[in-house]
Length: 453
Image 1 (cartoon, one colour):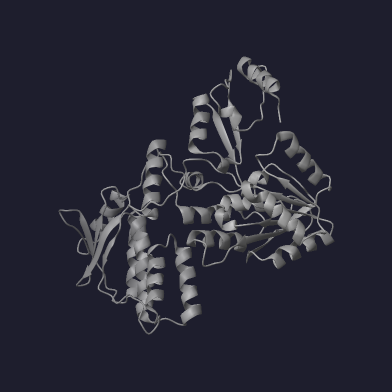
Image 2 (cartoon, helix red, strand yellow; image 1 turned 90 degrees about the vertical axis):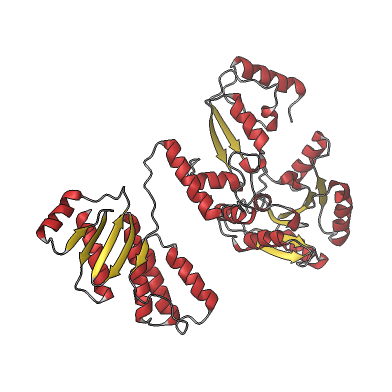
């Protein structure tokens, strides 16, 4: 807590360039703060800053470099990193001897609270009890004192006088208080190695990133820590709150913040990249299409060459599908069709084949044909082939204008066997094939494409 006179001296030093590094709160973003030559801004706990705060940071200097630090990126920041707008580095190595925090979601029951507190006291530890309503926090503290007379209880919240709050926190740090009933003021910036149990009342009212930060107040030593998330009842809380709590409970391993942020992105959406919303779902075009559009836009802005995308039309007239007797459940069949359509490389295709055999047993010729067709589709996309047809022993290929066909190799093939290869006026290439077996015909097409590219 700085006095007004000290704060003014720091501000004068910033304006005149006498201060090289300044560490501060949101106070540094107010309009009366001026920097002589600002070059780098490091934002700790980035999720605590709103869009208005970040715009103020950008206006401080047009060429300022910004590094954002957070255990749980907000949805928009994470999405901007995933699509390449912002660079991202991940620190996954935990401190030495650090253990994961065991997390429990349970209804508010006095027996659970008393048991959790006494268990921590028995091993000489301290406890945070988070009650985020200042108007009733004193009443809750008295209730806990009556419930657990063995514990020395203290209260801390943001509306206390600075000196009074400082004294309470020092008492807790020195062990004179064992159970700290507090508001979300303890969310960040505190390190109490002896506090290894946190109980969060009405956990359903907090966001996922905030819960993760609050849980991080414990487990900061070599001891096992415990977090109890108290809710009024599963039927009372919202569906999104239920998903948040479930995600936090399941992802309790070390370094789970990034995975939790991905869950948060899924639950809340990515928001508007150029607007004020830092979360929100993209309902108009769908998330996958939106991401593809953003990736293309970013590449254009970077001046990178954009490879055309084609969706090959395959007309081979072969039976290629999942028979109903092979995968009886309709939803399962649709799921595997969707996974097939979204395969990115041959390794994923191989993995899916192995999974099918493992789950449903040996597959029929129709399924084998389907895998061959999807393999062919992947190759056609790579070589920018828009359409392939098979009729009366002849294969016909229609190439995209930007397809990287080596014309000299193609002309050599045509000259070498004029009867087999033909080119139509619209640029369609066809050639005769003696193969009637689809398992040989499709590899023949792939080999031909590799020859002329």
